[in-house]
Length: 186
Image (tube, rainbow, N blue to C red; front, side):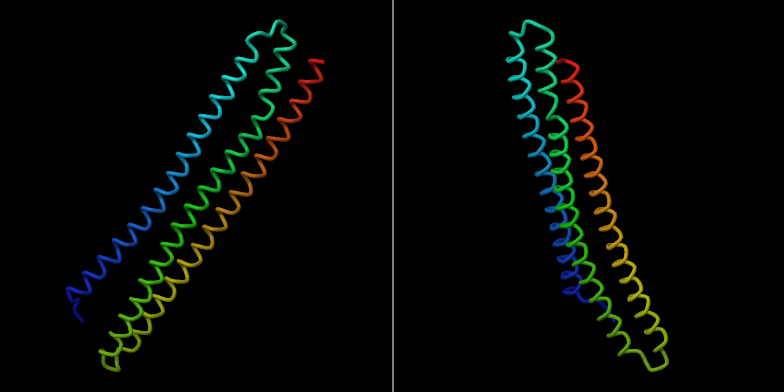
């Protein structure tokens, strides 16, 4: 069996479409990350400027310490929010890329299966073992791919949950330290 120019062209076109889709997914994730970081920088600069202006006329150290504690208290919550946004962007991007890769893999698997079926028709009856072995190899490869995709998704889910747990713990510790600092200043 030989490949025709039309088949080669169709294969190249499909490869380019897959690459285009993967690139769009990656750049969409990058764009979201850049937007998030720009917003964070704007917010941090504005909050720092406002804080500096509010502390400029403070006359005693105790008031300054209280103002500093109040300024730093929401930091852990903001860090948690930022972390959650990063996780969401990462998860959305990885999910989009995995969906594209899965669709491409299914398409390629189907084409390979069709090719094997065409070969099996053109081979005399003595070669059934080879065709069966080839079909089994393709089926096993598909199962390995699907299992690895499930494992990757589980790792992403576990990582996301662990990061959320650690962030929640950091917020709790920050709140406790803030309460202790306020009590010592009073």
